[in-house]
Length: 224
Image (cartoon, rainbow, N blue to C red; front, top):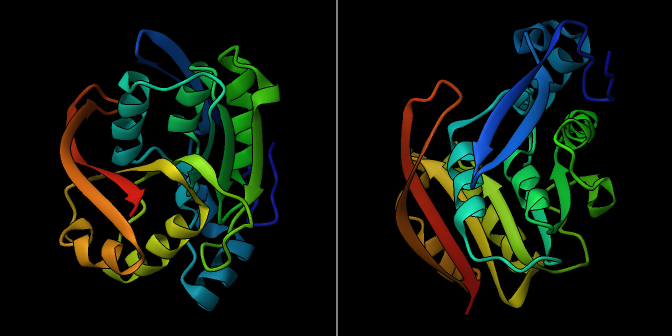
């Protein structure tokens, strides 16, 4: 069993297999993530700040971002940070393309699963690091590539996310954010601009875990 300070999952686990860019990626995950909803520490954090264990399942935007990372022109050895990584699907694809990936999440619970996924997928564990990250307190380091999937559930979170990206994105670098079509992810251009960012939205598509098509938006974000 895998434990974390954010809630303990006691239950069956599973391994999901996907292919992106011709490479197989195997992802370790809780088989019954709803069990986390009954964990006392989860309930306490939810009462305090609305916390929910979103990390424990695959979100549509993760498949969109994984497809983007698989197909995009990227240079091996590039340093990337995935924010709100959850189970880290896009970051795992980036590892498969020989990038160095720093996985971050508000939760520390998914990191042990990502380590399992790296081993299951035959990826180089020396290219990954992981750390908890509160978006309100950006780290004092910048990256040429920032990755994020399905991060905008509420429009109110967009300014904090934009501020984080402005703080950690290297000049000349780019942030790639994907989201399915959500109201919270629309009309964001003024928010990016207020933080000194330019953002270009483009339509993207992928398939989810069941093989059904997903459509959404890729935001390509750069410092002005």
